Length: 474
Ligand SMILES: Nc1ncnc2c1ncn2[C@@H]1O[C@H](COP(=O)(O)OP(=O)(O)OP(=O)(O)O)[C@@H](O)[C@H]1O
Ligand SMILES: [Mg+2]
Image 1 (cartoon, rainbow, N blue to C red):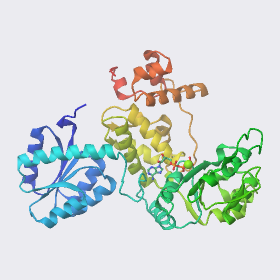
Image 2: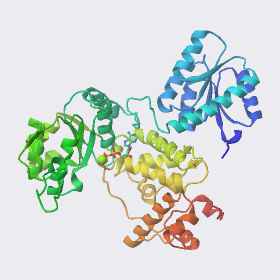
Image 3: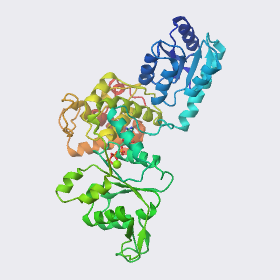
Image 4: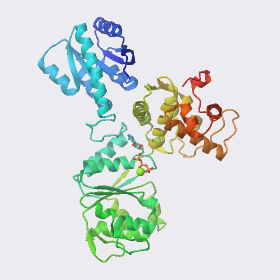
C-alpha cells in the first residue's frame, strides 16, 4: 500500500506568522495536511494530543525554545521525525538539533524544493524507524513502561537503584498493575542481564508439580518421573528467577524456597545430592501477604527474605492522571498493529476512562483500548466503542474503590444479559478482535450469518456509529 501525501499530518512550529503561512501553503500544495502553533509549549501539547507524522520546528521560539520542545517531545514520542528550521546557520545549532533527535535542518527562509525533499526524507525515515521499533523509547531505561505520576517516578527510581544489587525484590499490587513489567525492568538493568531469566507462575501449578518445576526431580521420584529433570532454580543459575503469584504456595514449598534464599542450596525431588546455585529472586503477588501471614498461610521469615526491597504498584484508580497517557500509548500501539487510522481519543471518551475504576488496572485499560481501536471507525475513539460497563460506571463517584463490574445490559431492551449472553458477547468481541474488525470474517469464524452477527452486535451494544448510520460496507 503506498501512502498519499494527504495521509500525513505535519505540525509546523514557528512564531513568525508570515514564514509559517508560507511553509503551510507549500506543504498544502504538495497535498499534506497541516497543524500550526507558534510556540514550544503549544508544540509539545499538540504533538502529544495529535500525534503528527512529522514536525517542522523553528529553533528560536518564545516560552520554550525548539531544542527544549524537541527534547520533551522525544521523551513521549521517540519516533516522530523532526525537522529543524533556523535563521542562524551555525554548525553548533545544527549539531545541537541533530543531537536532540532532528533528522535534518533547513535555513530560514526555507527553499520550497529543499522543504519538499526534506519532508519526503523525513516521512520515509519515520517509516523505517516505525518498523524497526514500533514501541516506546528504545533509548529509555524502561522500554515499554509509560508513566507520568510522581508515584511511579519514585518506583522507577527504586527499580534503578535496586536492580544492580542481588537483593531479592517483592513486587506487590493488584492484578494488571504492571508487576511483571517492573520485574522485566529490574532484570534488564541488573548485572544479570543477558544471563538466564526464568519465570514461574506459582499459582498455575499445584504443590508437587510446582516443586518439581522449581527444584527438578530424579528419575522415579514420583509416578511419571521417567527421567531426571532440572528445575527452574538450576536453569536460572547465574541469572534471575521470577516467582510470579507467590501468594498461593504450600507451606513445604515455602520452606524449600526459604532455604534456597538463605543458603543457595536444595535437592531435586527424590534426590540426595545437594545442588548449589547462584540465583537472584524477584517475586510478585497480588495477595496481601501480611494478611496471609496473620492467617498462617504464608511464612513470615520467607516474607522478610523476599521483601528485602518491597515495591508496591498502586492501582490505576490511585493514579488517574496517568490514564490519558496510557490510553494514548495503547491507542498508538494498536492503531499501528491493526493498521487503523485512529489518532485520538474524544474528550468524552477520555472523561469516561478517567472516571472509571479499572478493577483490572492497566491490563483492563489496554484491552479496552484495543477493543475500541478494532471496533471503532474514523480517526478517534468515541464513547460508543467503549465496553458498556465502562461507560455505565462513569456516572458513579470517581473515587469509589469497589472493583465490582455491573452486569452488562442488552442495548435494545435494557435487560441484564444472562450468563450465556454475556459469554456470547465475549466470544463476539474476541472474534471481532481476531478478525481486525472485519464482520464478514468474524461471522464466518463464529459460524453465524452476517445478518445475525449484526443483530447481535446491536443487541450487545457493540455496533459502531457507521452501523447506526446504516452503512453496511466493510
Ligand atoms: N506503566 C505502563 N506502561 C505501559 N504498559 C503497562 C504499564 N503498566 C502495565 N502495562 C501493561 O499492562 C499489562 C499488565 O501488566 P503486567 O502483566 O506487568 O501486570 P501484573 O501486575 O503482572 O498483572 P497480574 O497480577 O495480572 O499478573 C501488560 O500488557 C503491560 O505491558
Ligand atoms: Mg503478572
